[in-house]
View 1 (cartoon, rainbow, N blue to C red):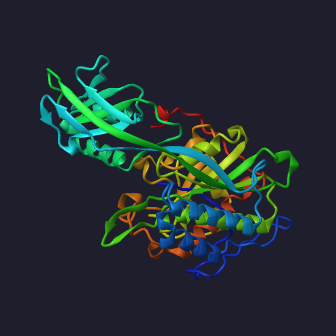
View 2: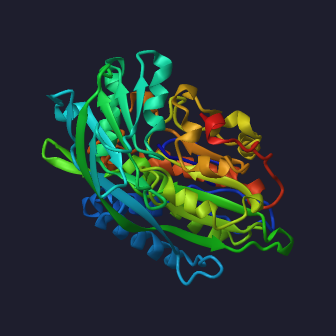
Length: 450
């Protein structure tokens, strides 16, 4: 999933037409009376979720088309590229690996295709039990605690043959589907392989295993624009608004439809980033510098956010508003959204303080069992201590459109979505103006984050 917040003003009672603007009151001298444009929200989300974007798959033509569309929007609004950048595209390279089905014979028995999986960086894998340097052999037992080991071998550091007890058949199937889509890494994959076999390890073990892997570099781009701050003493106090623009691309057809449009996930959040950039540009009163980021590759491992985090000093990031899946009403009803990791900093409390007198409210994440705080691009900077949270409205446990071909614009409530963006705008005013600074998140390792 993905997510985060934005800006706004006092919400007007009653439903709003999709093409109206929600007005906000501002203090004298604080900037022009401004509203988030419902027209911009609708236009951008429709463009990103259109069939001609082909689901905005990573490394696919639709993903590049979406990045170019967003860069044009930043230019229209009047954002500036980052210092040293010629344009809004922050280019990164990832490496996509596709391994063929495994041919495996264990103790004279030919395994069915669904019984063996390989994750490999070797162009050609050819193992036999008579090799001078055979792979290490690992057994994953039936106990529930053993399941985590299955995923710990996804990045091979040595040649390893893993026998997986059939008690983990479901998890094995999940891993098989993950591998079938191809794997992605930030660096060229190591010249090692892991082969998983579903079944018990024979006492006297003989085998012949073969597979091949193709690796290709893929150029991706984050789309990053900035509004410089007006307070020279706060030049290095960045406030970031982000959403991820990638989705699943072309997937297995359902009723003849193979385009995973990703209207809610996360064209909705990316549209919020564009609308917020337009809003703050019109106000032209931000004390702190504002960065507007559309991340690539969230769906395949968060590589865009990881690359972005290496381009700046995390100590100079005051807050990150990550916006993900805000196209439908939250479980708390209209004029509400939730913030992931609410208890990890006072970010949520500061935002809520700026909504006093409005009809909108932010709630803590109602789905802690989903671990949403660490399932979107905010997690990368949160692990570095940044108050980086995701704002969302999605009722994920019951959302039947999530990661499907039916996540289309027609399923969104654009009026409520615009109200959420407006509320983000209003709630961000204290941080943007330099009057509020959220507490830092204690830096966490990946293991602690889980």
